[in-house]
Length: 93
Image 1 (cartoon, rainbow, N blue to C red):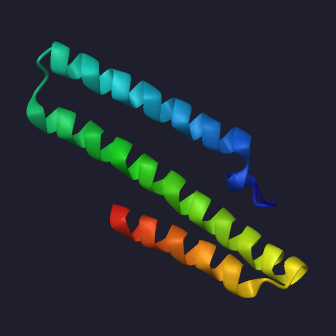
Image 2 (cartoon, rainbow, N blue to C red; image 1 turned 90 degrees about the vertical axis):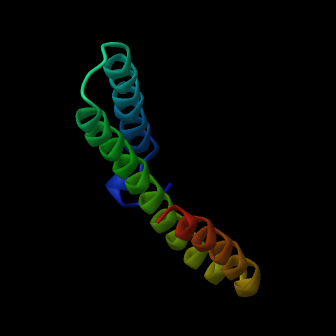
Image 3 (tube, one colour; image 1 turned 180 degrees about the vertical axis):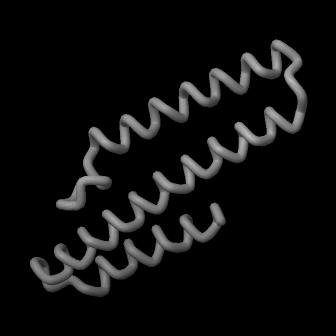
């Protein structure tokens, strides 16, 4: 991905694995009929974790876009790719 440690594939996979565990826990909370407020807390936690992954990927994409634009000289193409990513990211927040 990029040179930043949070942007590594291993780091992102670890985050996704934690989210998978959270989702499984939420499913069990529903099965066990846990109080709704407790379930909602866990849902918000999972949503925040997904948001963080989106932020990390957007940052990595911006880094790569900048480097690729300089290397290739195709700044408009690279900027359009970044614009699309930002547009998708903004839909999450």
